[in-house]
Image (cartoon, rainbow, N blue to C red; front, side, top):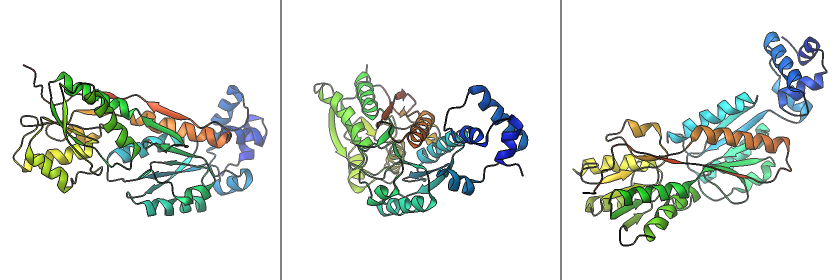
Length: 328
């Protein structure tokens, strides 16, 4: 089995230079870096993570905490993060917190024991577990921002505004909101974006009802009651899972989408194209989100004094068949 020294000898550089290339630290010319990586490939060198951690103080691993892997949005996000981390020679330890705050607290303790260099975290709520503070490594919040942390997320407010402007353009005057969990900042911003535009046009659009629901296909009793009333022409769901659950519930009630009521989602998960009708939604750039989060975290690991940053990514409307125009 090849060693770090074998790679250094093949290229004619120091062991430290090879280490700099593999860890992304230190200053190495592009030419030397290319030669080192070529030698690593030729010699089939595989770093010993345990020895590396003891020698450098770094494990070349990051933790990834996600709230719910039954939501198709998160497995796709995890895949993008793992791909981006692997390109930078970092491994990923994934924990599914199953939407439970106590599981998050336990997960941070686990990651501390594993000695990860940093954490990418999508919170179940705005609460920050005390165990995170004891982890003592950089943390980047993804998808659900919390003040004071480095963060990467989409422009949720703009997404809500786009949906309101879309409703106005199609003549929908009576709208119901399935707003998502109020304890999650991203859900609040989506709702606020829609309300902002609607409030500016009180003579053209009215929010008839507004119900808080979990990010799930299972709707609560209040939501089901409002769907049965059939008092709106458009339902705006805070995410695609909620929208899919609403379409299913409406079908069971004998109401057709979009003939009897239109509906929109948010996220653009794969399910949006297999549900009937295909779902009009707001597209989040999941690949960019994962890549930016990894880049931001690695930057913080290599430079702990780096200023706290928030990266906000653009969103766009994807029109499908779940919304009809009411214009003459």
